[in-house]
Length: 293
Image (cartoon, rainbow, N blue to C red; front, side, top):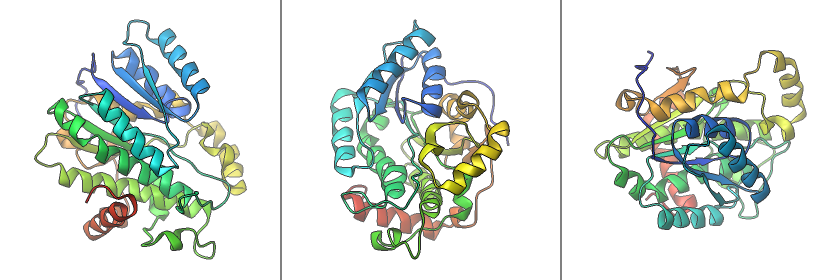
């Protein structure tokens, strides 16, 4: 099913975008700025963030100046800080785009004891979204949360404990990434259900196989496969199209809770459609982050 081509105006609307300083995030930021959005860029590195802001000024000189907030999304304490900081700076958020993601070359545990993909790709969006719900609600009908997932979710499953996720006998960096992408979809579905009466909608998407820096530190096998796929990979600008589509569609209610690919609704795995898994994931995430109870 393809949504209507009419667009929801972003002129002057506040759009928070994680992973905004490179790859798909920066490409999406350019397109959103050209549509008049007031962008709030989230990145780890100030220099890269300022370079992104300069690129946006060139791409969309008439757009509002983009703001930059720094955060290490692998550090959940820092994500809580960011959520509080954004809540103080912005009384309303019209669109939250959870785009940032990692795929390391080996199974990695953060200093807080979480597997790196799980922390960055899932728990960070879970925390940030829950912190910004009052600002999304203040924006009124049409406000939306967009999370970048992946077709890698077909290979994912949700482990119940942090210990299981960092057990190298059970997991690898690649399986951890797949698990986190499944979590992105289940989170979107659970969020959609919880926000049913608020006017806020939740959406997720597969950007496609993309030529981006996500793969630069990935496992050797993944990098080899990406070299083979490179001639067929999308450019970041092409991959950002579905993000922009979901950020601007006037038919957000029809897209609520659904997974998109190439600007169309797409199938998900059986696990991603499992309501029991959806509620189990929310409970696990709330316990591990101390938010969203």
